[in-house]
Amino acid sequence: MSADKVEDRGAVEDEKERRLRRSLKQKIKKKDKPLTWRKRKEQHKPEKEEKLLNQLKEFKNYKEPTESVENNTIEDDGVEEVVEKKKSSKLSTQGRRYTVSIALPGSIMDNAQSAELRTYLAGQIARAAAVFCVDEIIIFDEHAKITRNDIDAFDRGQWPQPGAMDKPGDCNFLLARILQYLECPQYLRKALFPLQRQLQYAGLLNPLDAMHHLRHDDLSIPYREAVVLNKPVKEGRGSFCDAGLAKEVQVDRSLEAGIRVTLKLTSTDMMKRNLRADVVSPSEPRKKGGIYWGYSVRVASSLGGVFKDGPYEYDMLMGTSERGESIDEVEVPNFKHGLIVFGGLNGLEACLDADQSLSADNPADLFQLYINSLPDQGSHTIRTEEAILITLGALRPKFIG
Image 1 (tube, rainbow, N blue to C red):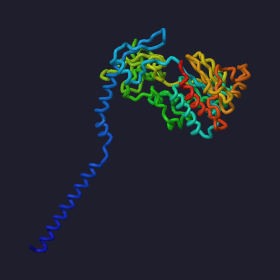
Image 2 (image 1 turned 30 degrees about the horizontal axis):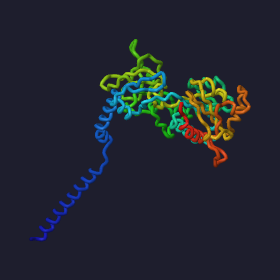
Image 3 (image 1 turned 90 degrees about the vertical axis):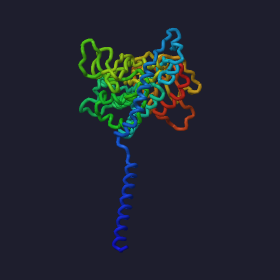
Image 4 (image 1 turned 90 degrees about the horizontal axis):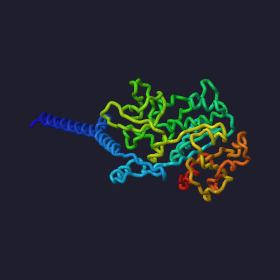
């Protein structure tokens, strides 16, 4: 065989080997190539559909518990199947009849050195309130400088005034605004909180992940928070709401656009054009289902304003101070609406001195219980955000309501 033929055969074999290697590399590359978002979505589609169908079945099989007026308890209907399904859902078999409110001065925000740290401080308080199921947070001015007009303007969404410089007492409104923002479900924030400088760092905070912060496909709870949409409706029909679901929800009444409401879903048939719901009180999930439904935020002009102008008539008042009685020796009486008041850097004594409407000489005279949350503390001071966590953690097993 000539040398030329041997070289040609060797060249052909080399070319075949190169093609084989190139083919193997392409197969390996194609195998290791990450899936596109469309293909990943297609892969998870059957799982999501199955999950949604199970939630719809659970919602349809849920039966409202009957309430006993005599002993304030909620009774089931005796059907074992219903009880098992209720155990697997987020609904409790017994509602919670009592509420817990906390009050603290907004001046603690002034102790933070930057806007980022002030925002983070507010986030710590919001997390503590959500973890321990606080129903109301009251922010009061320990210097008693803000007026009723200032509070009304804040409630109408007119704070801060356009072009106004920072004023004394703005720390109270800043804390209240961040707390309101964090409590609001994520799908409602764009509609209820327009862009503003005070919330520029709020998006970096740890989410509350409270029970009413539901995902778009979560129907395990028949209640939802929603905002009323500005859409025309036929006469006699209810308004349309955005409840963070795949479809809009039509409610049982006509409401003003832009307000936040609590809904109880009555129809979740995704095959229909719209879902249906009734407008209910924000306290209904807590009273009937035992679900923590977030906290409300109120601003008071002084320490004395904490005890009035609120939604509840407090029948258990508790103050906190290092001069109080040890929390280990305190017995908390039964209550319907409890209020726990925390002081700022200078304690409740400074808040009392600044409020001319209160005649008491000692803060202990304002409360039924005046407690020391952490006797024999290892630090000279306990920060207010730390005191909230310590106090609520120690009091939780003492709450009967």
